[in-house]
Structure formats: C-alpha cells, structure tokens
Amino acid sequence: MGKLTGKFALITGATSGIGRGVAEAFAAEGANVAINYPRQTELDPAETVAETVRAKGVIALTVQADVSDEAQVKAMVDQVEKAFGRIDILVNNAGIASMSPVENMSAKMWDQLMGINLRGVFLCTRAVLPGMYERDYGKIINTASQLAYKGAPAFSHYTAAKAAMISFTRSLSLEIGARNVNANCVAPGTTDTAILADVDPAVLEQIRASIPKGRIAPVSDIVPAYVFLASDESRHFVGQTLSPNGGDVFL
Image (cartoon, rainbow, N blue to C red; front, side, top):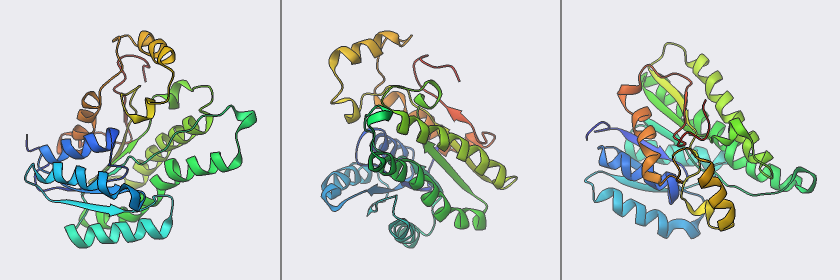
C-alpha cells in the first residue's frame, strides 16, 4: 500500500470496467484521482466512482470531456491541473468497441472508433506532456489490447487502433529520451466488463476455453499492471506493453 501516495492521476473513461478499477486501485495506493467521463448523462456513474475514491481518504475530481475533441481535452487538462496543481499520471483508457466485417463497415463507424480509441490517446498525451517535461516527472499508461497482436474478425478497426497505440507509445518513448517520464501500455486479454454483455454466451465459452488459465479475467486481475506502471518501481520500463491475458497471447 502507498505506492502512489501524494500523486495526482487523470484517468479517461473511468466510470466503469477497467477504468473504474484503476481509479479505485490508484486511490487505495494513495493517489488523488480525476475521473473522466464522456457525456453529462454519465455524471452520476462518475460521481459514484468519485465517492468510492474519496472513501479511501484521497481527493477525487470528476471531469467531463469527449477525448476525441481537441478543445474539450484542453479544457479537461486545464481543469485538472488547476484543481490538482499538476498531473503526475495519465491513463488513456477511454475507448469504445463495435463490430462489423470490413466489407460492411461504414466510414462513420471507423472514424468514430479511431477518434476515441486513437486520436484521444494522442490529444490527451499531447496535453499533459508540457507539464510532465517541465517537472521532469510523469507516467503515461495506454490501454491497448491483446487483440492488437492476434487480430479478430469483425474488429479490424478496433485492433488497428490498439496496434497503432502500441506503436505510438514506442515512438513517444524515444522522443522522451532520458527525461524522468515513462510511457507504456497495458494490453489486457478478455476481461469481464460491460463490453462483453452483448456477446453470445456460446462465444464467451469458446473464448474462455481457449485461454490457458481457463477463465475470463475479472478487472482485479488487470489493474495491478497499471499500479505497477504508475509507480516508481517501473522506472526502467520504457515503451513496453504488459499483457495480463491468462496465457492467451505471448508477446
């Protein structure tokens, strides 16, 4: 406990699933957390997460922004930096998923997913870097996916965005150089979140059976990778991708 005491973190897409789990885990380790949510209709879930975070004795802030919108991202980062004084940790977790074979996929579906899942990573990262460079301290953690490595039918846009995120993180790490700022990825395997709610139970069983560990991971199996990468224990991890996936994919 206490690995993140006194740190200030911004987590995008933090109202449910992995994002919420990371927010609560960071708070348990002593971090103050800004909880991003995309629309005003998501304010209530964001406040619920904030209450859970505050119950751990740290500061919680809710902040609305569509991460694909440049002006909204700038306003979000300005708001968090004004409230917290700085951003030590950025978790680019906001993302959506949809399904379509390539021949039926609309350009709108492609663009919407790329806007949130990839453009959002770029915009949020760009917005926090000046402060991190000025203070010579920062941790950037991007939520990728094991599907970036194995692919998946009907998810070409999703897997392309996640693969690009990993490449972006590697190139960014080379730009950062010797600064005390680290950028890394977590690429979870199949995880028990709301994104699986519409998946056919028979398909889920096939997925579960294909995982060497024999189970779909709860969020609690995924968040320790984020805590590690956010902590000073990860100081020598540069441009890396950690993949808690039960042995489904070997990176």
